[in-house]
Length: 361
Ligand SMILES: *[C@@H]1O[C@H](CO)[C@@H](O)[C@H](O)[C@H]1NC(C)=O
Ligand SMILES: *[C@@H]1O[C@H](CO)[C@@H](O)[C@H](O)[C@H]1NC(C)=O
Ligand SMILES: *[C@@H]1O[C@H](CO)[C@@H](O)[C@H](O)[C@H]1NC(C)=O
Ligand SMILES: *[C@@H]1O[C@H](CO)[C@@H](O)[C@H](O)[C@H]1NC(C)=O
Ligand SMILES: *[C@@H]1O[C@H](CO)[C@@H](O)[C@H](O)[C@H]1NC(C)=O
Ligand SMILES: *[C@@H]1O[C@H](CO)[C@@H](O)[C@H](O)[C@H]1NC(C)=O
Image (cartoon, rainbow, N blue to C red; front, side, top):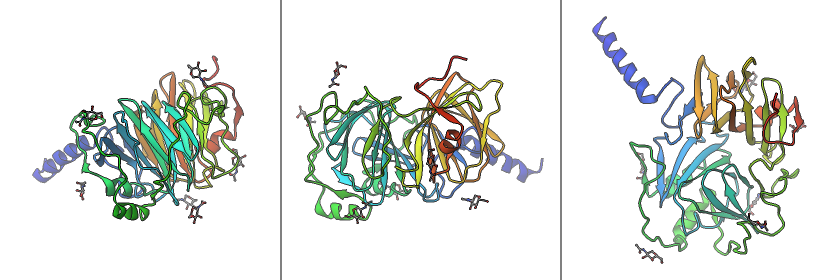
């Protein structure tokens, strides 16, 4: 072999190893739109804000400005996770991937456990508190670019050769006072409007208020109007069964109404698809999947990758892809730009379904 080619081959091997198991795997969200897969805890681009570690599997740059997907890993805290605030240009969506946190939105409060979702539309005053030792919040923000805020506020960049979720230290007691006026002013340019007069209500029953909202006991319908905060407890939302390629159960968190036409979000539960053709699509908007349970195979650009809990796939608009499960029960979260996303494609041939599991045969 020609010496130069040999050197090149070695470099190619090293860079492939560095990037992971396929050419789709990356360590950080790309700075331009391309198909990619990023493993849970992999993002090399992570920052520390106090004891919270922020990771950025999808950014404004990697999604062409459509949305950001930002995860926050943290131990429990006796303090609020942020000062109470609102956003004027970002719709923020909280999802509990691990652990437990309290979410307040105006005069509503809910305790979010694994699989629960909360919608914080623009101009909704909100705050949160992390309650369990290994909690992970998945935040979806539309439009993209909200990562500028944690980058601005970061105490330090976070790296870990073990990819541990956060630094296992006992935190020194941090002051919970409000930030200096100069910071509060600067935050406005990052779409954070501090609401220092807001007092999160403390009259919670089982983590929830006001009373009688049926949290984790009755169905949570997604509103048919925009701009009100709402919450969907895991498996208490609306469910639709699609029987086209094995079974798929769609559970919407954000619809073409509540997403204001910008995006939709929800979960799909998928059965093992033996003897079935994988679902194949090329969607008109950018799409992200995050696996919540089981293992999801995604095939795009002639490569197949298997994603497990916390792994994210980003599929640009008009990119042909297939997905399927080789294990009995796989569940993933979708975020779709626009109103013709995967959810709409599946809903066209779906029936209302009263269960969070698929039929026995
Ligand atoms: C949010 O509040 C700002 C300032 O009051 C206002 O200009 C804007 O129209 C509001 N946005 C929505 C969606 O209500
Ligand atoms: C994190 O790293 C970036 C890029 O190297 C640098 O610009 C930034 O100042 C660092 N942030 C902190 C808080 O150290
Ligand atoms: C932190 O605060 C707790 C409760 O107020 C106190 O018991 C503890 O000694 C403090 N720890 C430090 C390191 O100051
Ligand atoms: C609070 O939780 C307890 C234990 O699960 C339950 O018995 C009780 O009914 C709940 N209260 C309300 C108001 O939901
Ligand atoms: C919104 O979604 C519903 C339910 O899938 C569908 O019937 C309706 O046509 C959609 N509307 C638009 C504007 O996409
Ligand atoms: C996707 O393809 C359609 C039809 O060819 C085109 O109109 C649209 O601009 C494409 N979208 C992107 C983001 O490339």
